[in-house]
Amino acid sequence: MQRPTPAPRATGRPRSAAANAAILAATRAALVELGWSGLTLGDVAARAGVAKTTLYRRWAGKNELVVDAVAELFDELRLPDRGSLAADIEGVVLQFAAILDRPEAKSGLMAVVSESTRDEALRARIRTSIVDRQKRLVLEGRARAQARGELPPENDPGAAAHTVDLIFDMVAGAVVHRTLVSAEPVTEDWAHGFAQVLLQGLTGRPAH
Amino acid sequence: MQRPTPAPRATGRPRSAAANAAILAATRAALVELGWSGLTLGDVAARAGVAKTTLYRRWAGKNELVVDAVAELFDELRLPDRGSLAADIEGVVLQFAAILDRPEAKSGLMAVVSESTRDEALRARIRTSIVDRQKRLVLEGRARAQARGELPPENDPGAAAHTVDLIFDMVAGAVVHRTLVSAEPVTEDWAHGFAQVLLQGLTGRPAH
DNA sequence: CCAGTTACGCTACGACTCGTATCGAAAGCT
DNA sequence: AGCTTTCGATACGAGTCGTAGCGTAACTGG
Image (cartoon, rainbow over all chains, first blue to last red; front, side, top):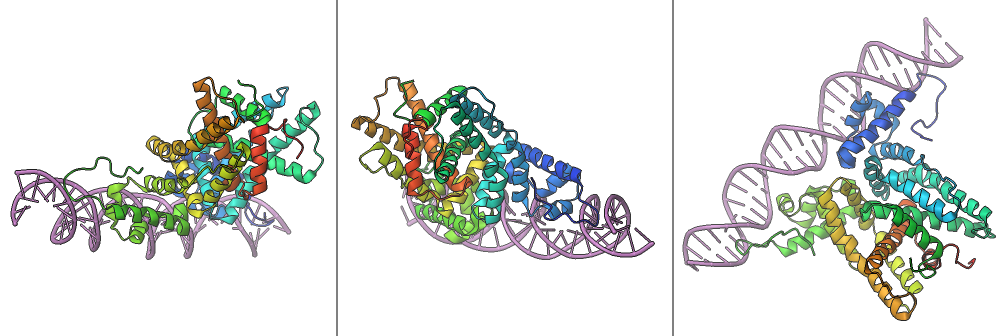
C-alpha cells in the first residue's frame, strides 16, 4: 500500500506504524485547514506529534507525503450492484464526486498532479497508488454489464484494455473537471445525464 | 482580456503594455524551466526586466499571474470544419491535447485549479478567463452539427445550456485526465475512439 | 511649460520555511 | 549484553516572501 519503507530490515528499532497513520491523518487535517500551498512539513510534524526529522526519513518531500495521504481517500470507492449499467455508473459517479468534494482531496489531488508533470517518480507513484488502483471499478462494472447482457463480450484483449483506459479517463475526467475546474456540483441529474451520454451517445439519445 | 488594470486612470503615468506582455511571457518561460513550485516572482521579474514591485502592483500574487499567463495559451484553439461532427471533435481534441502537452500549460493549469479550491476570487478568474471562454467551441460545434442535420435542434434553451456544460466537462475532462493524470499521450486513435463513444455511446458502438 | 499624479526601478528589511546535521536516548533483534 | 536503527530535540545557513521607502520617469491638464 504505502512505500515509505523501501526494504523492511530485520534488525534495529522498527518504524512506528502508529506514527505513520498519525502523519497521514495530520497531513489531511493540514490540507483541510491550510490547503496545499499553506501546508508545511513542520506543521504536519507538530500535528502528528513527531519530530520533523522523522517525517523526512520516511518521505522524500511534500509531494510524496500528500500522494499517500490522498490515495487512502479513494479506497473507499465501491461499485454497489444497482441492477443496470446506467445505474451502476450513476452510483460510482456520485461516490467519486462526494470524495472529490472533501477539501483534503480537492486541494491535494490537483496539486500533486501538477507537480508530477515535472517528476517522473511522482507520476509513477500517483499511477500505482491512485489511478491503476481505481481502474478495478471499470473492470468490475464491465464484467457485471456483460453478465447482464448489456455489453457484448470482448474478443480482442488488447482493445479491451484500451477501452478500459478510455472509459476510466472519460468518467474520472468528467467528474474531476465538473467539480474542480467548472466548480459546479455533481447532482443526481448531472450524473444521470452523464451516464446517458456515455451509454447512448450524443446522437442516439432520446431528447430527454 | 486581462484585468490587471482595474480602472485605467486618465491622469499620471500609464502602465507599460510592453511590460505586461514581457511579464506574462517570462512567467511561461519560468513555468517551463522551473515548474509551478519552483517559480518565484522575483525570478519572473528578473526575466521580464522589470522590478519586483512592478509585478506586485499589477497582480495580487503568483496564482493570478499564472492564470493570466496560461489563459492566453488556450485562445489558440480553433474548430476547423472537417465535414462531420465526429471529425470536428477529433480535431479539437487533438488541438487541446497539443496545448496541454506544453510544459507551461501542464504545470500551470492544474496548480492554479488546485489553489482555486480555497480561493473564490481565483475560481471566478479561472472561470471567466479560461472555462467560459472555451465553451464557444462546444456551442460552435453543436450549431454546425445541427446545420448538417447530425443533431436535432434544441427546444428547451435551459436544457440546451446544461448539455453544453456537460459536453464541455466530458471533452475537456477526458483530455486533461488522459494527459495529466493517466499521463498517456492523446493519439489519433485515442481521439477517434473517444469521439465514437461520445457520439454513439458504449452500447451503440459497433465492435470496432 | 509647469504643477500634479501615477508608474517605475532599486534597495533593504523582518518573518518565515526549507532541508540537513548533530546528538543522546529508546526500542527492537541475535 | 551488544549491535543496529529509529526517534525527538535543537540549531543552522540558505532562500523566499511581501512591503516600505525614495528618487526618477512619463503623461495630463491648466
